[in-house]
Length: 262
View 1 (spheres, one colour):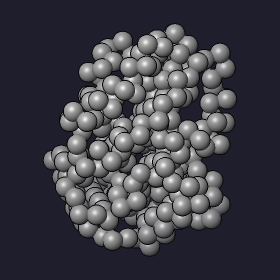
View 2 (cartoon, rainbow, N blue to C red; view 1 turned 45 degrees about the vertical axis):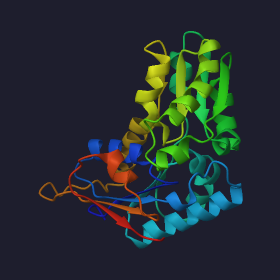
View 3 (cartoon, rainbow, N blue to C red; view 1 turned 45 degrees about the horizontal axis):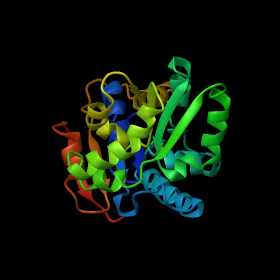
View 4 (cartoon, rainbow, N blue to C red; view 1 turned 90 degrees about the vertical axis):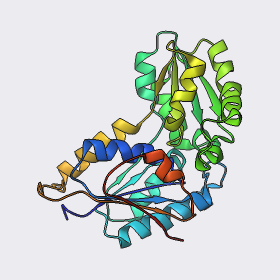
């Protein structure tokens, strides 16, 4: 069990931001990543469709022998994580907007959240907000159009910059001091976002926290890979033919990117 891979899935390549954090924190672990780019984004889909896609991805990763599954998608987590945990005998790690650290750190008591419609509409997001946001004003913005541009590797483009300005400028006018990124695709936009926000606004995402939780659960189950002599290997499956995954991960070693119409 210890040498089996960590399974990760997302509605496309965005969850590679989480994958990077996991392999940096757990360098001996093997990983299998499913990029469901054919169905990206999940954020504008019905809950029933999101559940169907999450089950499909989960069963693929179980079939491939994974020992734990990281749902590296905010929309999938907020809509499906409870059902997945109830339906499959494997540990799941979810990801949701990092509202708690933003709430603890804010001085202005005004926080911006950039997320998909599916995440902002979910009951889990509502519960988390209610728990941590007493006395704090939240400026919620749907990042419509951002995920498709990232999937097409059009991050450093005028279209992306225009959208980001449209979404973030009103938050700056409202005096936010923290911006929570509520989609695993969005960390790839941090350099572009900082060009708009400067250094006056803290940008928070969930990647490192998800990696730490993955390590903690594997340790508690005694399933950390302790084969020190083994070389880690990483397989990324994409169900569309695209060069975006390679562009986003750069020169990582022992990574195979494969087309698979799952």
